[in-house]
Image (cartoon, rainbow, N blue to C red):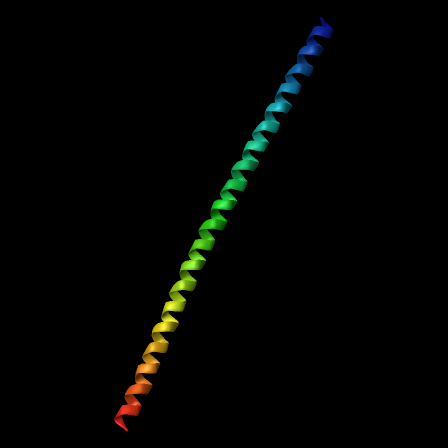
Length: 75
């Protein structure tokens, strides 16, 4: 009876360890996927901000060029 109980205890522990390992792997995979999505989202936001900043600089340069051209014509 002791051997049967011991065998059952070992089998139960083995299954629980295996189950925990699978859960850990799944959680790790989920965390990696979430990190990838965060990185992708951050890169998209940074790209949009860079594009907007470039457009602002372009607009400012166009305005400065127009002002310079208009000043030259007035003299």
